[in-house]
Length: 564
Image 1 (tube, rainbow, N blue to C red):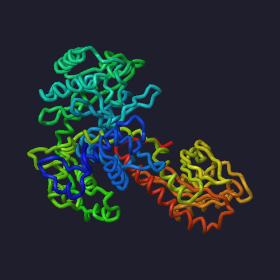
Image 2: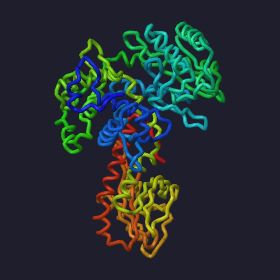
Image 3: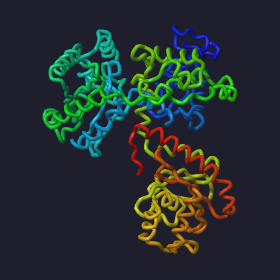
Image 4: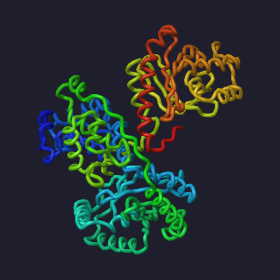
């Protein structure tokens, strides 16, 4: 069983020998959490899944929680946190393919009115790096980061054409060890192990057909009803760097009719993608020099429970994604503020663990798609409410009053997330509840986030009426209340929606700065003055909104998230 390495032991690791221990074990914990069927694990579950000592698991969890990559609920449950998607985002930036090709994939999806994917080879599997889906009842459920068995999807037959003998051997070993594909959570497992040689011979034929035709089909190999057609996208040197595929359902197409419908456009867009890759790449802006090594301060704060080498290794991983094409050793050291020798140990460890590789003549290091196995697909599935919920819970713990998130819905606000406080007298509102925007703190904050003319038009057409003796109903007064919220960055409404109910709200912005939601705290009017509410609640409320914004920015850097 691996032992818990001290920082001194990690720093003494031979650059050409075993990977840095804490980094290797920290990544093992992240993989275990990502592969677990449920969203949370107890430390004891992690011990069993990784084979690590309990003390080692505790130190890793402490470190990753400090970094924001994990969170703890109910004192013991360990969950992946949205900020962990920084690692996968680093790979997607480093490889450069989504930035170069995704606009064309989106255009193709619009033209065909079908879901379109970009996928890259990852060992003996196929991993998605872009999804442009259609919103239908029978919708594609795959996410960026999902891994499929090569033999059960159209891109796999294209990639296998170029497999080395070692890759073929790895694929056969995987078939032997996992004949039902239970190690691929994105696909339904086989109901029974296939007969020996059956998969091998069938896949060989599909690979040969794909090699001859220049395209491949998936006729319900993943699950009944799902059909797909894929073409390769080549780099300027002729190697296949990714596959472009269109996916549909048998209610719309058979595999044959999908090929007839989509293949001409797939080939055209594949050629356009190859031209985009052949165009001179824009000169990448070197990453700004990193500041001092912040892991030192965390080590001083948390003591032996903080694994400095794990933190440094992950900082090097994210630094490689600061520009397409990766970084040199010197660039990684400069971007992270680490000593050159420390950065070198981290880079070589990431290489040995399968997350990075030398590029070109070996001067640069790039990230590999395996980075996406670190929870990216699972976190990509989070809804806006799920992103906000833990921050609301922390806010309620601080202020001891109920907190909510709402969005604009016509002239109303609609609650999309809420955490109740435990009081004898509390505000009883549920998710989905709607209230008129003009009479609520969240409504005024949301209206303040609109252009002034649009906000005034919404107020003018609203059915304004006095809900309590305190409700503002004068048109000019309401316009000024919204303007005041725009100036102050928050809104405080005192008993205008319901007598005795007071609330204060602040906006939530997306990564472009647009107001997309509002978060508030509701309390009873008897619990102090308006100034008391501002002093006691506003700082914590503002911090909670900022935390939601940070998670939202990481999640939506590469993933399209629908906010109700």
